[in-house]
Image 1 (cartoon, rainbow, N blue to C red):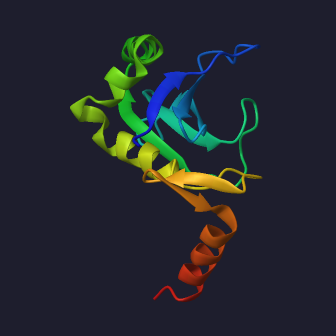
Image 2 (spheres, rainbow, N blue to C red):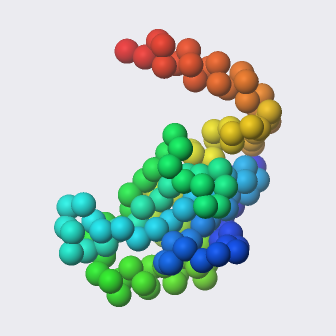
Length: 139
């Protein structure tokens, strides 16, 4: 079963940041505007995988997208994401981000005994062992 994405409701707004919830994995992704590191007068989107709303930082994946946007382009992009995240993610400019989001959803959430990866239920402890072996045998 493929992941679908929707905007998560916030009890306390975080400025221009928003959260996208993946279903059925239930992963959350915080999307926040930041200055483009290559062009500090312009903006980009910083997408951070997180386990709960308001909890960021951990050892989860991160992705930078939509580099080089003006302030108005940034505001227009955030409006598009809020109104139709699935439609925005299916755009040709978002292929890399969409692929990254789907890949990130294949990881177990902290505290989960089982999770869904590529449509199959996987035991989280076995996946953790597989990941450890892969790190140890990496060339």
